[in-house]
Length: 243
Image 1: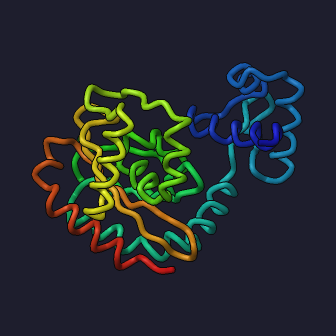
Image 2 (image 1 turned 45 degrees about the horizontal axis):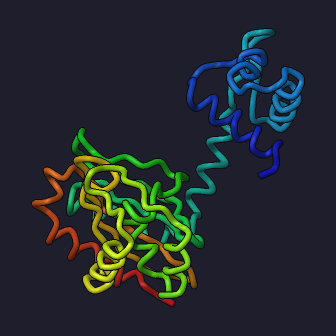
């Protein structure tokens, strides 16, 4: 990634993290970059109307231009427009977190994260990558869509890390688990990536791209909902599936 693009994004994320005006000196210190480099980015963002200075030496803060642009982008996201109503309905029906991710080669990025009413819930941030291919249901859904040759090439170069005592660390066992997921039409993460968390995922294709829908929640609730949740999930993905 271009250094100047990465640095600009770092600035915006820093304001979101700290939620207060920040001075040039503070930003340079927090990001570990030279003062002069920080000044150049601040000046460019201020000139474009994305930042304003509260008072002389009072610190900078983003203007609502960031919000207005983000709102316009989000309101016209073609994938979200196509899936949001059904994903909200799935979340309401099962009352657990529902996540949408986009597959791109051997990684998946979260595009939408819907939270349930429960205070104890599974959280994922939009824009984050699925953390593991072998220990998450979304990762397994990705692997389950590979050709046999692609899967074997991936496994040959992979180490199956144990995130919990339930993580699958044997490649033959993972092959069997993926085969069972393909047969069912959905993939299971039974406390394999986080202790006490169960997730299930299924794929759909649209406009020549692959997506994964995931239902996630505490195992204490998910285990009792698994049969109903898996049926709702696979039905919804079938309804979204299109060449």
